[in-house]
Length: 434
Image 1 (cartoon, rainbow, N blue to C red):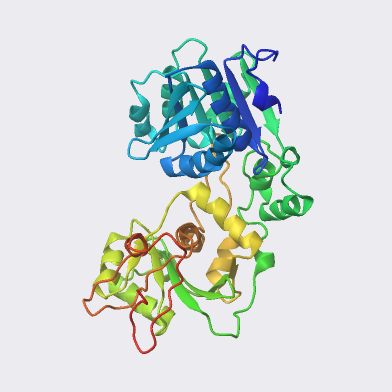
Image 2 (image 1 turned 30 degrees about the vertical axis):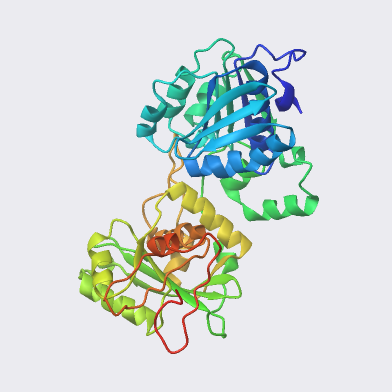
């Protein structure tokens, strides 16, 4: 409850400049802080501008706006949303204020917020934003009685926000509050238990225990215990993930969907150094055809740097999507997918199995980074999870069209309605059901 009323007249913390909430996932940080932020702004200011910041505009809308608007309306607030301007105008009992939404994706994002005069700013998941963007937002809060609001899940203990704000909270006149899952009364013990099984290693320490810890050792230490055989039943869909290399190995994984689980059923792996010869794009394409063996992949996700191989696949009528390549987030998503059984790697994928036993965190004192070796099957698996599972299982068929051109899953998805889509080919045709 402290985060909801720290700024109140009777609170001993009312003169603090900032509030910082960190800790476990699903602990209620975002909801409690968001409600408190809007209540404070409407109680203390009139006709003033504020900023609500996240990693991206989309994440702000999903995590903050969509979560809080129904709650604020139930309290009697009225609002107008100006979608094109990323602006929310909030009104209550004759008072009105403006809240602008910003995404702090990279260093260039600082320019977006530059020049504004703000009464306060809320940074949701501040540890995911570049320092320049955060400091620019802080500098915009020049009005009297302006306050700063930060929340995040823990990261590496050398992270700039941990060192500059959490460790220095007292000297910066900031109130620091640590959250655990037990602070969220809406979570039952069964839900908390399920979340505890989703993470391991550094991710468990950070997302469940709420500790700022460094990642060490194997990245997927549990993976070899989760290997399985290829199911005997026919798969419902297929997908291919590709990490392309010329001197470095090329790794492709064939994925099959069965009863809601994606199985990495087979692989193609070629190491030019080990074989003492390089293969051309055409030779890798021949390996790709041998991997799919006449099966139709619904989606092909490829290393975004493999421009020539992507072009070759597209020229042969296959739709290819450039993979999302956020390494740390992709590793976290892959670890969760493995732990929860969303994906399974079969024992026949010998190079993936070998890399699972070798893929580890680098001994880097300043940040989380994997060692850049024994990571090629690991990368194609990460591409699959980040791009395919992350897309909500919305696919276009990657089969050859009469025009000879494929359609990426993103272009296909944009032409669909917002409802979830499961692709089923029409009987007697090779075309997508759309």
